[in-house]
Amino acid sequence: MKSITKTITVGIALRAHKCRFNKRHLIAKGDKRLQVKEGRSEMNYCTECAKKALHDGIDKLNTVLGEL
Image 1: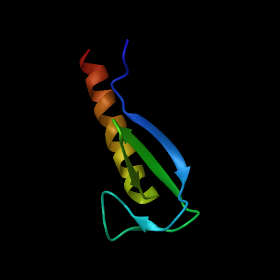
Image 2 (image 1 turned 30 degrees about the horizontal axis):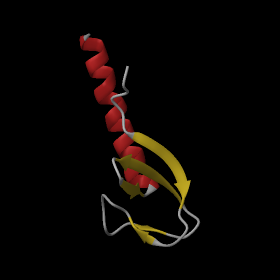
Image 3 (image 1 turned 120 degrees about the vertical axis):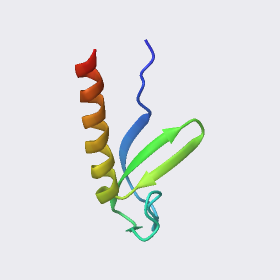
Image 4 (image 1 turned 120 degrees about the horizontal axis):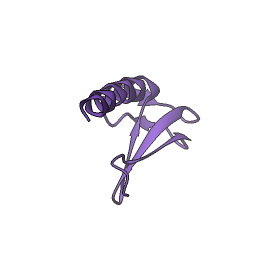
């Protein structure tokens, strides 16, 4: 069965760049970041945005699981 989740990993930034969700959040070189792969695209999120997104996703999955 195919997974409904996207490919997500935790990686280390090789250079400084902005968070994909909030452009005001800077991911510095050497910082941990959440990497989400969607097709050929890879999106990187700072730890603050990543934690919020993961908690929201877990809550939604638990709600759907409870409905089953």
